[in-house]
Structure formats: structure tokens, C-alpha cells
Image (cartoon, rainbow, N blue to C red; front, side, top):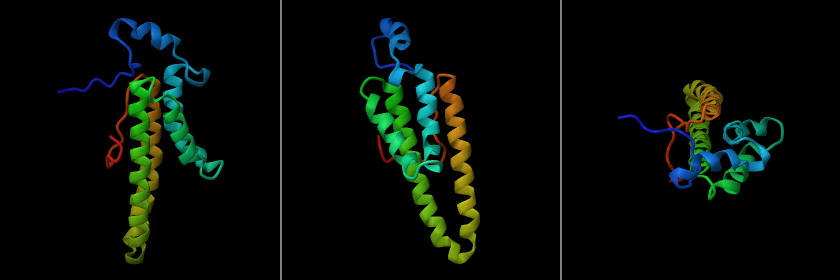
Length: 137
């Protein structure tokens, strides 16, 4: 059974194509905004805490206007929370040496999953991060 992962604003079916073309969050193309929603996690590398604040602001700005943006925002936030938990567990495990490997794995997964999500969003698909604990439904 295959899921429909196409990005569509939450509008009646007959108006979706027209409204998706007219819907320009922050003046961007719809798929571009969704791509940046994934990539906004990297903003923390430039400005401290921006990798947490920017995805939340992007998601809350348009979550009521688009079901796809709502779903992508939830997926991004669930992954961010999950990865923070994995990092804390890895730090504790560093006392047993295995934590260094798990910490490295979490960092690599965060980078790879975020890029995969951005690529899927640019194609108009919703990406569900693997190994994510669902906190926000």
C-alpha cells in the first residue's frame, strides 16, 4: 500500500491547482518554501539557536493555510526533538566509549535526512524522517 506524499494546500480538490500556484508563503514558490523548511535546520550553524527557531516560525506561520506545510513542519520538529534525545543518550553513552560512535551516527543521520527531506520537498513530496519518535501529531 503506497502513501500519497504529494504536497497540496488544504483546499477543495477543484481549487488546489489554482490555489497552489497563487499560494506563495513568504513570497516564495510553494515547493521552495517546503524545501527551505527542511533546510532551515542548518541555520543553527550560522546563527546560534536559529536551527530551532526558524523551522518553528516557518511552520507556525503557514500551518493553518496548508496541510502539507503543517505535515512537513511536524515531521521536521519531531525529527529535531528525536535527534536531541538521541544526542543526549549518546553523550551518556560516551562514558562507555560506544557513545562516540552513536553521536557521530546521529550527526550524520541529521545531515543526510535533512538533505533527503529537502530533495523530496523540491519534488513536491512529503518526507517522513526515519527513526523519528512522533511527539507532535
